Length: 293
Image (cartoon, rainbow, N blue to C red; front, side, top):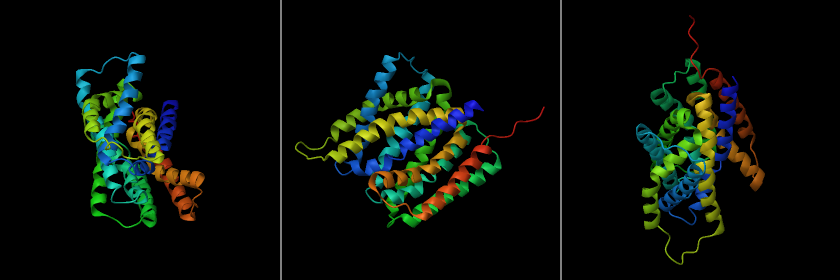
């Protein structure tokens, strides 16, 4: 029980950190191209991760771990950041919440396929209701849709769900921060090359908000958040803890209200209450019942 509780607490902290990712990405796109932003954030996070690995003298992963680490890198280091950055050139950050609300289902699905988890049937009911609640609320708050943006977000969600599940599976043996650090290091040569090739032209004026957005997605979204998130998934279960991401859009709106003074609509409070109940139900039924001997 203590292990599961620690996992859910760690996962919740990861979700809070991730809640600022899409707004920060949108801000950073005001000064950087999607490709440069994706590669630059990966390079910065990889250098920090490599420093941690060296200072703490971590053992190199086994050869058999390189394939799964490549999957993690493809999903959360390259795929999700790049596809969401491209999508945010076609849709608003609010509209993208529709798809982030589907991420827990994708994570749970890959948790079953890759992690060998077997949630109880009631889990899928709570998960689906939670995802529908988030999607319905987000749609009511969104602006005009874009087929290109929507397709990019669907692809981003699928890749991210796979990266989450694969990383959580590895975290059980390697540790959460070690997994994301090794995945970043593995992707560093390619990402550094792309960053150099897509550097903003000399003399380009880039505002402070864009630099701050880049800093946030590099340090927090790309590294610190994963330290807590992978630990949470490994301790509490991929399918169950993954449902905490249903709360991510609402954390983002709450931050907007606190920092920017934006009003909080009653519909947000109602939708959040439904989602909290769904997360509680998903947690209860996330593990298959123990067989009686």
